[in-house]
Length: 438
Image 1 (cartoon, rainbow, N blue to C red):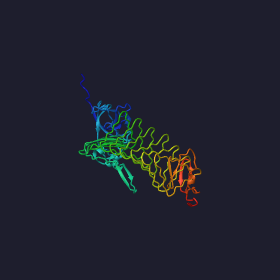
Image 2 (image 1 turned 45 degrees about the vertical axis):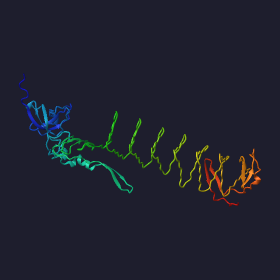
Image 3 (image 1 turned 90 degrees about the vertical axis):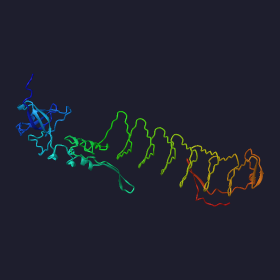
Image 4 (image 1 turned 90 degrees about the horizontal axis):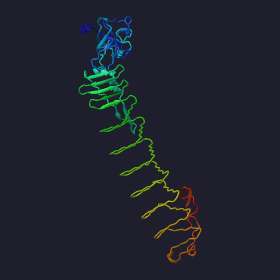
């Protein structure tokens, strides 16, 4: 049985000068105090032996120490000093800037940085010292907000980004930081416990002491869900978008609101539907606009009311135009009240029929025709209060003309014009010459 083992270990302290292991085994080159000279000309960095790290965490997910770090270890081959192993890194405080031409300095990396001279190796956010050069100050000076302008031109803020909850006390904050500026903090400071993942760009996710989560993305954010996605919000949900907002849904979309739904659009509102639109209101349905136009391009427009329908214009005209027939049916009384004159013009026949009496009353009633006036009362007719026997005519009869005064030889005081066959325009003519001569 072997009895010697490793009895002549040579212990050392040194500085990592090279961590770029060509075999990518996590090895580093170390210049050891009192073993290697200070001069890189006498012993260049690339001639130093590779030191194997000893991982006391039993975890092979290992990151080699950065160049410039002080390490502690031993040589397995003793004074031959060709097989080094490192046991750990010793934190300290750098007092001189990097000089890559000299020994005990980084070969590739710029560590320590100039701002870290006379600063302990433990991160500033862990020590709660000199934090103005860290993300803490950056978050305080780059807070985002969403503002609008009121009707008087005065700006007001609708939302402002929360401030950082950093309130670290040493030694409670465990900080894992990288040389480029990334950091992960797990802070156990009493009353200020939090977790932070911070990217060097300024993007971060922070879980605050009260359990709130704050997230910021300095660039684009993309979320991909390959199955279902559920979002539950017990309180209010607010979204501010300074640019445009688009939502594409390949399937169906449904919105259920137990309270009111308000949509405010300061520009145009366009709704394009390939199928039908069905609006069902349990209360009033109100529309208000400077101008309203409704058009049915292929079929009919139907208005139905269980009670009244009212059409009203305050100042302008009201036009009803039909390219074919127009029907008006009233199951009870039909009342037409006009504040001025009434004009009815027919290019064809004009027929009035009643199953009961027809009454016409006026200061004077004029019947003007180029032909005969035919009356077919069916049994009796009264003229000037006198009964006139009348037989139902089989055609035109002129027997009543001698009993009726000749109509006045004049035209009505109005002119009826039709500027367009599609639309009727009935206007009082103020230029009609002549006066009532009757």
